[in-house]
Image 1 (tube, rainbow, N blue to C red):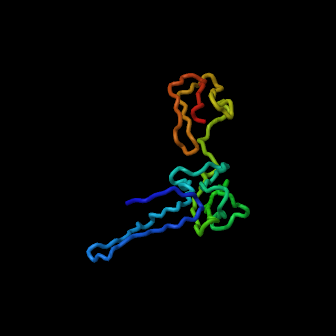
Image 2: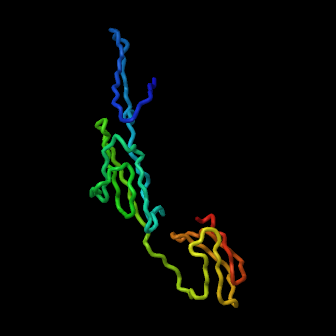
Image 3: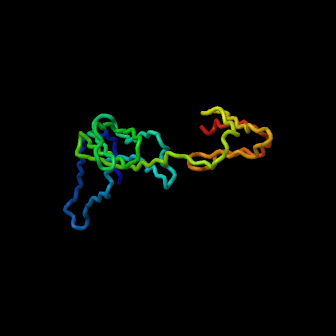
Length: 191
């Protein structure tokens, strides 16, 4: 037999369980309650953002850590690397630096405490490219949202292929067999 019912978060409930057993020595009654079957919920700040699994954040980006908790009914504090962050009592936290962020939440209507942590890492804030003569290549506009133009200023040379990489070094677009000194590339889908 399975019993269920709708509940409201933060409201106290009482469970009354009644079983009957007649004065019969051949038949006995018992109730088994499965471990962790009373799930009162938990806080989940999501997966860690790590360089090792290519989910780290890009330098100078902010990130909103969301707890899913309502703005009312909880006493909340945040830690960064096990040190309290002053004046941070909202259920969500905007971060802009690497660290281990921990949420401590107490439900004001019960004795329930929730905690979870998330690791935030950032990719290094430098890009590296092979050395080349920049005065011979014109790339415009910068920044671009739809079409970029790549042109060799020396009309004797020609472009063969253009490969566009993201900050992780992954190829995101290739243009082959250009065979001229100028190319227009649609980068709208990359944004």
